[in-house]
Image 1 (cartoon, rainbow, N blue to C red):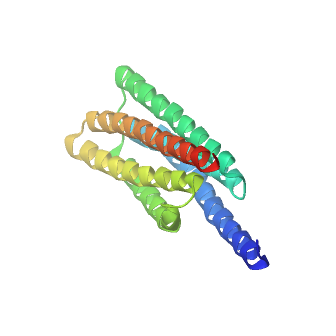
Image 2: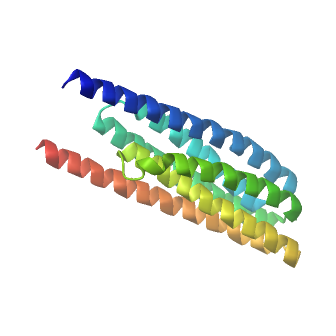
Length: 206
């Protein structure tokens, strides 16, 4: 490998670390904001989105550790991220069901500005990660995380509006469940992608 190729790979790795590091910091910050607001507003949708943010932050940390490592390590990183998403998505579903049984009265006015802030943050991260949507498996997983976040943010905004209009907690419960199901679906997509990548790597080595 030429010195030019080495310098190019090092530069790419440095850029990847910077982008994923920013995404990690923003997601963890928004997890704290949404978790606090969700608890105060008694909102299943906000708490679901906060847990999704936490899963993504850990997923970004895994992706950060995979940068510059062997392809097998990157595939394992994506598989671990998928497992984490599946666990958190299931936790969101169970927590939303518990809150539906126990009863809650979400506050739409508090939900809306927090969801809008989260949408702005995640949209910015999605733009940053767009270059990696067809890149290496651990970076593609990061892009899928963020895409899921943007969709979840839009769902929380819809829940906040419906709660305010209908004066009912049902939109919050339904959309909280929907976010949980969507997160699990994204986990399955990442696992399938990583498994296919592993099969292609093994086939290429044979």
